[in-house]
Length: 203
Image (cartoon, rainbow, N blue to C red; front, side, top):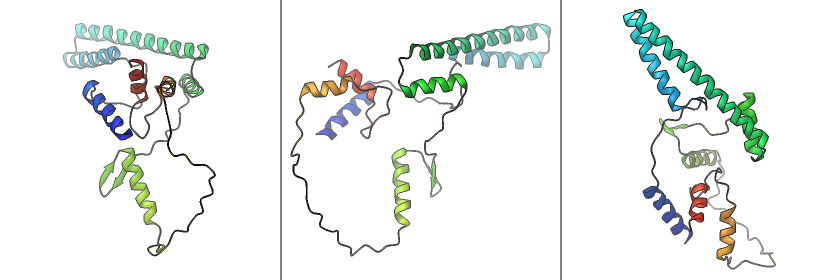
């Protein structure tokens, strides 16, 4: 039942939610907007033209757009830093987000705890689940104990009570969905918390 619901949600998201593949540059500063990037590309083109032609008209054109880029960068940096300071002062963020903002302001970099790509049989493994399976297979292969004829011991059942089935009602499910934190990562079912939160609000 749960697997069917999960499949329906993921299938609907895949068909109905627009998506596109983007290139994420990890070290790109957050204040670098699309407008600034376009201006920088334009500045670089004009600079090449000015060097090739080497006349005062083209060099003046380059100096003008160079100053525009400088002013845009300064303004964008100032706006970004002010927005971070405002978030710290408002104190509406979780502890994790608060420290993330403070680290951005102070220039402290958080430690990257993600597992890098694994090279297995001349192929790079990027998927987290595939990485976990490969690591599990590797560590399992390090054991040289022959347990082919081993028999698991019989463990006595000491629980005084058992749970035959879990009963849930609509109100309880709604209460849980209402407190979901959208920025959190997806769980094992791969359903984005933001999707659950927004889907619940339209139900």
